[in-house]
Length: 121
Image (cartoon, one colour):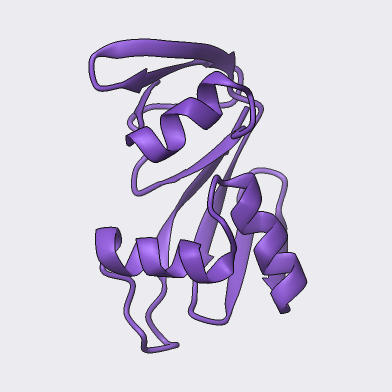
C-alpha cells in the first residue's frame, strides 16, 4: 500500500516518530502488507502494517472500531485526544481538528464525523 505525506509529516515518518496515519480509503491495504511511504515521488520509508481500524473523528471525541476483532473504543478528554493527536504528527487535538476541517471538510456539527481508517505500523 502506498502512502503519501505532506512535508510536515514526511520527516516524522522518516525519523520513526509518526507510526500511524488516518486515511479516507484503504486502497487494498491489509494488516501484514508492506506500507511504502512517499513524500512526492520519493520513497522515504517502508514498514509492515500492524493494524487497521475504522475511525470517526467528531469535534469532541474519537470513536475507533475494529470490525474483525469486534472491539470499539471512544477517546475523549483533552489529555487522551492530545496524546492521540501527537502520535499522528499533530501538535495537539486543536491542530488535528483544524487540519481535518481544512483538508477533509470535518463539519462543526457533532452529528457528522470524519469517517476513515487509522493505519498503524
